[in-house]
Image (tube, rainbow, N blue to C red; front, side, top):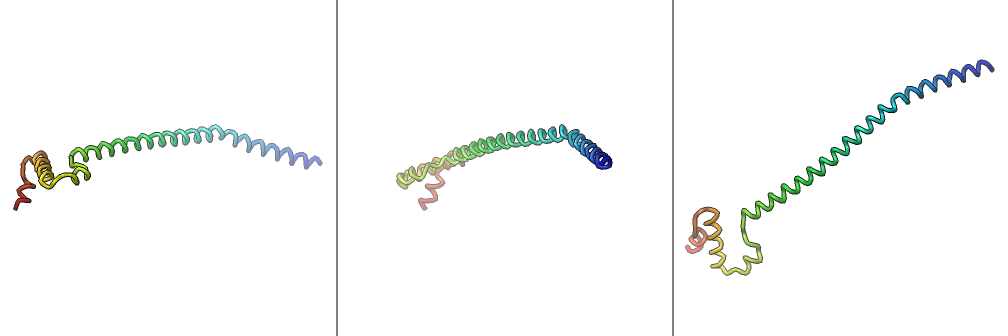
Length: 109
């Protein structure tokens, strides 16, 4: 009976030692989890900021491209007569290319 009691006491001491070692590492594990959570939150916030910047950049780029072309919408071109459209294209070319009458000269031949 005494042998069994000693074995149980030894087993309890071993278990207690193992639990103390596990509990000693617990703060480190919690700190590592907290650091990983903080990094994940920061990367998510930076991703959102990057997404907003991309949207703004492409909005400005598309607006700039629309302003550079200055072509009328399709419904406007459909209502124009051919001579009025030629006048519009000549004005557009004179503003953009610095010359005038390119379209009318090409269509009059």
